[in-house]
Length: 105
Image (tube, rainbow, N blue to C red):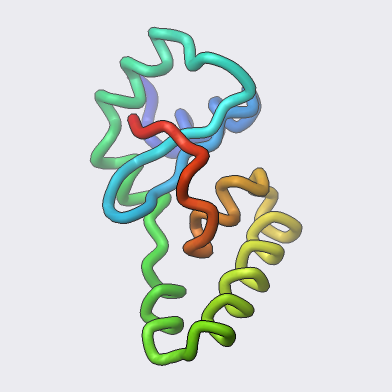
């Protein structure tokens, strides 16, 4: 079994992105996740969840009005995608957007 950071890096090379939303671990892949990769993700679930969780934006948005919070989330998603190298779906989910297009691990 790989170290969690190594596993994330290996999976990104394959086009698979892991992210957290609502305390759960999710993934986005160009196709079906191979069974051996799914098993390893399951075995590393707690460590992966800790690595990809980002609660700071929700804290920031909690006092903002709906329009301002939406703007902050859109800006955060763009930064995560362009500067962080994340796929758009992962960036949107980390920014608190677009909750209905993913599968949980």
